[in-house]
Amino acid sequence: MTFLAPLLLLGLLLVPALVGLYLVAQRRRSRYAVRFTNVDLLANLVPRRPAWRRHLPAAIYLGAVALLVIGLARPVMAVAVPREDATVVLAIDVSGSMKATDVAPTRLGAARDAAKSFIDQLPEGIRVGIVAFASRPVTLVTPTTDHAQLNAALDSLEPVDGTAMGDAMMQVLDIAEQIQAADAAAATPAPSAAAAPGASSAPDATPGPASAGDPGGANDGPTSQPLVAAILLSDGANSVGDVEPLDAAERAADLGVPIYTIALGTAAGEVTVEDPFGQPVTLEVPPDTETLAQIAEITQAAAFDAPTAEDLAAVYDNLESRVGSVEEQQEVTAWLAAAALVLVVVGAGLSALWFGRLP
Image (cartoon, rainbow, N blue to C red; front, side, top):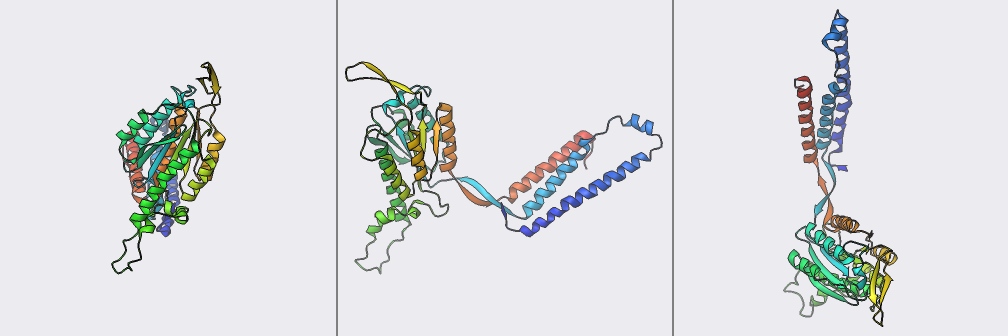
């Protein structure tokens, strides 16, 4: 916390001064009570002393004074505010291992429900895209604010074979690069009429390798937060595809796109499949937590483990605060003044309740 008028904090010296005056007043009060000529009669008249209750309202008032003085110094602190300019792309594993039931009701069912809840919690202005991947990635929904369309896409998810994690990440990054290019084009002023005929702005609309690798192109100006973020949920290791996940993570780092990863399931997860002869075979399907953690580290994001449906819901709650809001420096004088007013009301109420009078 910082202060726009820090010199006014010297007013906090009033608090110990008021404490001293209060103690002096209490001592004089005690001396007056001792002057009562019949001490036994005094004990009968006041069988119980109010003890700590007598001092609580005064302590509350002193707290209110301290808050008001701090408020006068105009404190500024980081406050989380909803974002309206971001895009989140969900990359959801729909490989056959998502049929495992170690996460109730199934891994895919838990992933679907948690993703719906996550989308509903996001600020209305944030766009969400969905990429599903098994043996190949498929963009189910390009980034949109239409929650009904997103929920319908999530309802359509069905498990199939294969885990092309690296290819899915590349498809997510293609979407991110398009958004970054559109944002850069919108921020570029139109060429003046006096510009030379050969000076076309067209090359600026599509960033080349140099601009694609510039992290500044991925950040919005006011908040310096990524314009696009991705959430990669998977329950297994990369098994097919043309691109290795860590190679895709390097591209994400160049683009300035953080990829938050979720390892869904437990080491005890199993699925039953048919072998080439049509016989059922039980396979262990533990999540590849190591690779997912490396992806998050390379892209400067965070990795999460979700061994249960409750854990998965908690992970999405955490991610909502990361991608759905941004910290801004705001003056909080009004908050402190309101808190001081509440303390005054509470102190007055307690004094009236316990002693039948206001101070």
